[in-house]
Length: 181
Image (cartoon, rainbow, N blue to C red; front, side, top):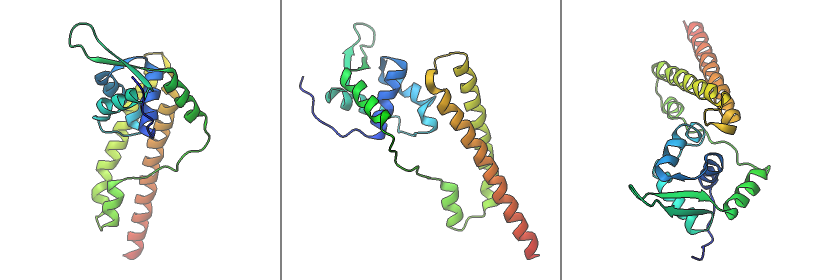
């Protein structure tokens, strides 16, 4: 089958990196692996695990084979072209700036009382911090997380800093409110 040239996106590279790290996988296994790894820093819709492998396989970046028995699922793995594209992209020192997309901040901008949003956000960051620390512990003892240690460390640091930032903003808000009285 002749491959068609396509534009690779950040999500394309994320999927190539998943297969490089974990080996051949079905779409369902890709979805599960995304949920416990890249989803923490690169959110993607779960349908991506089903659509993107087909697109990458049609372009020659992945190979696909049908399982012989059982549910006869498609199993995807990297091709040499996929490995080359991933290595070239990962080796390029240029990166797009991060994008902050935070509904709580948008609501504050729209006039919401930050106090009403603070408890839920603090709880979420603490929960994610616990989840990432657990993954990090598993990764350090070699339970299938491979080179994810660095990204897990970054995730832990991010959530710690976000908790510090929330505390700082709350302290400043409280100071301003006490001065107004």
